[in-house]
Length: 472
Image 1 (cartoon, rainbow, N blue to C red):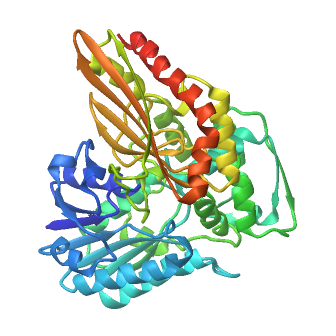
Image 2 (cartoon, rainbow, N blue to C red):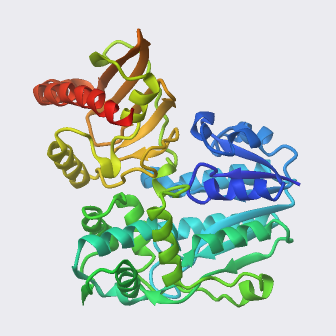
Image 3 (cartoon, one colour):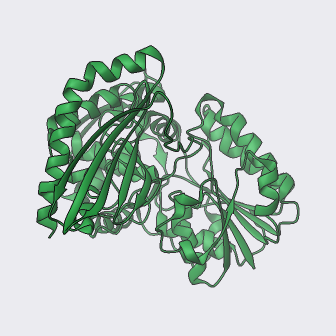
């Protein structure tokens, strides 16, 4: 059978693809930008279809000769029109996929009562349209717990950073998390089955308060004091507060918190009957395994690796692009210099003026940007398209080039780039900061901050050259 995976660069899809390949399936991935899968271990083993779910013509070739398709996308980052965007994408997919034998979709559990958020409604609508149009299976799951998952990262950061928590009393509502390994098991085994309609999955039922308390116990932290108050603030407002302490952006945090504003639990009878071999592991064990993966630096995918429907900007020379170039020679080999600048950020930090970077990250978080806390998936390895603090890896070519595109809140578009160019017996290190301002305000922003940026950029290129000597 030939299988198509949408969302292959996302948290779930990026882990599912290699498992499908291990089972000897013929796998095709649908991506908007083929550079997004460069460097992944499975890059050369899959067929790549370049297309977009919002472009009906591109889906015809992507779905040609496909038997089974995994629909693992959503438009959470598409802005206020994400509902319409989701609807357009799934309708295009349905029209192009009339011949499919089985579509497997990962949706979310719905609240038993209370108001259903726009995010939940949108995911449910996608599932309904699929089930009413194509032979499909919709897995409905609660918070997914695994190294790098958004739900786990939110729990991890909140529990680590806040020993005393005052939260709305809806954190006492029951939710039903599930380990990433179990979700992947359901998705894999489903490819061998006929379409089964809606299948709700989950492990033990806990409150969000209990999830934090269990994490603290597993992590060996002192007992967290968690107090509840009447929910006078909506999840969207609470999400902004949580965003100051976690790497999760406001839009994603809002969706996660809305999933706790009412009890969200699964009826797992159908899952137990159809998949008796899968015994979902308890939440505590899922936390232990996630922490172990992080400790071993074996995080395969992260929530921040998926760009959703954000545009992939290409840096092009054009009138109005401001450049700040600094260069120096070092006796180190190019691959050594590359190792130095490709490992900055995350826990390691930015080598110089760390307090200034941290302040910039806090201000960005307050402004609704990602801030610095997204960190990086791996301490030395980078893949195209993944997040690095408040940057996105736009291009990486070992051992020559790394270019990062800023996702922080700025009045324009910004990049920083490093090149390691062989020169005599060493390397010419070239650091280029670039800014494409939006209007007069963007230009004013650049020139007002340039005195500070000039010092930081100068110190940074020298620090990278000095740091490279450590890698020799």
